[in-house]
Image (cartoon, rainbow, N blue to C red; front, side, top):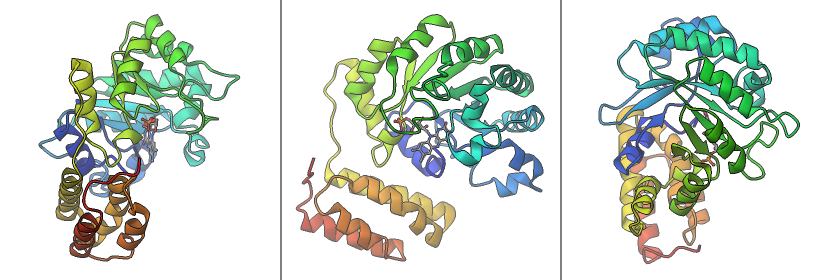
Length: 314
Ligand SMILES: Cc1cc2nc3c(=O)[nH]c(=O)nc-3n(C[C@H](O)[C@H](O)[C@H](O)COP(=O)(O)O)c2cc1C
């Protein structure tokens, strides 16, 4: 997830049971035309040695830069795979023909996939939506095309580009795809609980699930999914665990990016960690006015004392 899935976030996910993760998306064009790209992209491409397998996601609409970035990043010995973004709905991305716009041109998308597969020393996967809009749901066609291009697996977000993040992810179509191609399909969209992950795996027959927003402020979701799949009861983190985890997240961010960047970056994460707790909105507003991590920690500890620790509103 752009702006979110950097290594401190991913490492927490791995520590709580996530099996593999993906970087934020990296522009093939930007990478090609930036002098000393490895320096400019050092934050976007950073991986911590304690992480599990991380796939690097690339986007673009020109086979040449896509080929080049795939060759370079797959040859560094850092990542476990290359993922092509064909799902991003953002106007600035689709207007350049990248992201979900590629789904409108299956032949051209095939050219990109073939070029990346050929250039990459690592398995290449693709992230897609189910189509551009309700009148052009073509994920079945795209999945077959991807298979023919040598793609290793697909992650499908069960919405169209037109839906953006509205409506509901369509798991029926994802099930149809999983039944019609031989490559593994990973289901994605609205999976925000262990029971939902279990249900999606059952109804789609997919090889796995991909969790995005459900992991925000909630890395425990991965171990909860695994517990549910084993038939064990899932445990909820205590308020103390949530607080400690958020602070561990913050400490790693400070060590990596320095105090002032970390304070800004962590604002959204703290908001997600305390979401749903009593007085969370007030505390969030207060945290957003603070300038040092020490002040934020003091605010969180006093929040913990005042709320008596574990009250959740929902
Ligand atoms: C803030 C944000 C950033 C995202 N960035 C990316 C991205 O860079 N690449 C990508 O494939 N999907 C991205 N997504 C989409 C998610 O990966 C996922 O497909 C979508 O949110 C639906 O799954 P979820 O309900 O589990 O979040 C992003 C989503 C959000 C909310």
